[in-house]
Image (tube, rainbow, N blue to C red; front, side):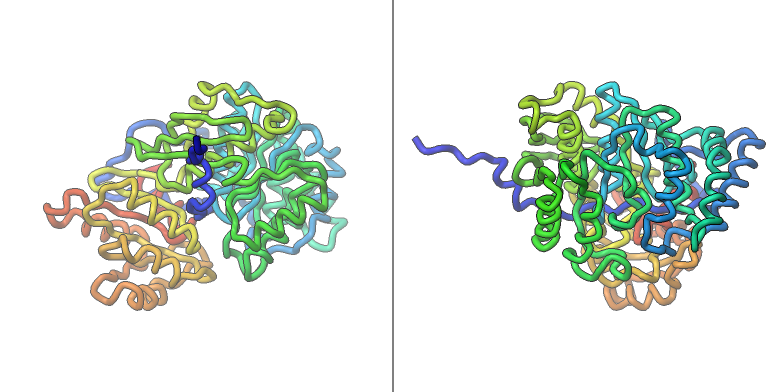
Length: 496
């Protein structure tokens, strides 16, 4: 009798695009007309209700803003290492799971955090940048650190930060100070495990003073090419820097050249590698109300009928990576030949949120936010929208940064947008709306492009276009193109 093929073998060729990391800034809080928010609580915190706490938080934010921003880097871990030294090496007080990659890092970090917490571990999560409040970057027990604790942590380490500033050629950057705060807050809590997302790259990223027992590499694609390299392999060289001696590497599906770099690094440091499509992956998935139902193959076995309240195939793959990372942390696949408790895994995934990733923030018409800002993220977003939403007509609102591959991003959305409203956000890096419009006309044609330089006007125009004809009762709006645009739109639409 011939052996029946294992359906799991077919995941090797499954799609590899992932949604982008969410990076948005605090914006104005003016709300659009006809606001129709969704029920339930918002996972993103608003400003502190106490005026004194809010004032103190703004003072901390203003102080941090005097430092180098996240787009200005001096590739070195010398400053953060010096800070860790004077703080007493707080990052050594707990084991860590370290996450790098181009797309999907924050969603994967949130899923890892949820799984660990479901197994009664106290977690610390450090992700970047933030949606509406800088406090979101440091989470304890699955929730953003309280504003009061954020302020206290900053004030505690500030004298040591100033000490390091005085001894170094360059002052600690905004991101380096926040990384120091996170590691100190985790040690103070204390946490059982830290889930840490790199800011950019890996080798010289400020987070890379930890020795992650598990290194997670989400899909590598082209982004930040001016700093990381112009090919997936070149970018992988930098990202491989988080793979430490004797670690376990959880490797999402990658371009072949990037995978080769990662595997070579693993051999050099005697790391164990688990590859998506080989040792773990997505067995099956189907669209469900509010998300999708997936069956995952982990390092220890199969986990069936898991409800994931996120849209898109890329999120199912992120879930597989997160599950394998947590199994590896618990020694499954090496020391133990077993699976995690299925009911606990189901409960954890069912509670996952990922703001700004195919996130529905309004109904009638439906408005969806997605922080796609590179071509790979845009393709994943377009596929997810097509699969999960039955829009009869979709209006795009796109505001992009001037250092991105805007034409390729727009080309990914062209098949799904009936019309596109081009705009710009408040960042100094925003592409001018008229410049963006000229690129959009090349892709969509003049009759499908509307120009509204102000984001609030762009949202109004898109909502009006979606509502204007009764035959399009199933019309919707997708706000995308830049993570900053998504954050500002989220606030304008009354979220936060």
